[in-house]
Image (tube, rainbow, N blue to C red; front, top):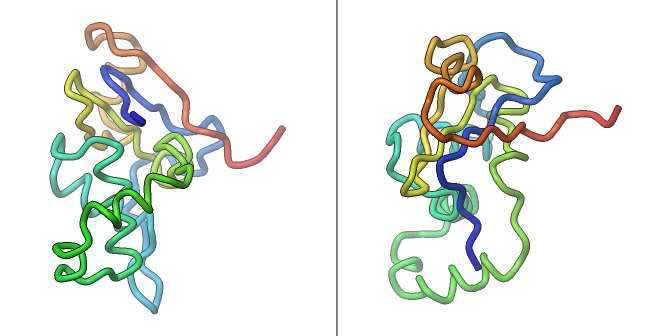
Length: 141
């Protein structure tokens, strides 16, 4: 099963409440899923595919130790991918925190803040043959 996007730009949700990219806040108990997504994607632009990012967020959010990942890596991945996973269109980064997500030709992703000239270039069609896909809305209208 392949869950990756290629040459695609996920725009912020039509009802995104912010006008510029925000770093998702942590909870008292630690990092949230959007916080981990942001940390990985912003810290390593064009390193992860959607599949790789979703899995890495999962193991960090669940606190699965590195030793267990080393021993049961393929089994853990199989368990994770067996269940349907929401794609990055459903991520809080484009829905709530103001981040567009660009997937390059290799399917690797980077975050683009909604207020940036780069974001405008994507939305205005100024970046090659990149397909625009909106993030899912926060509320049903």
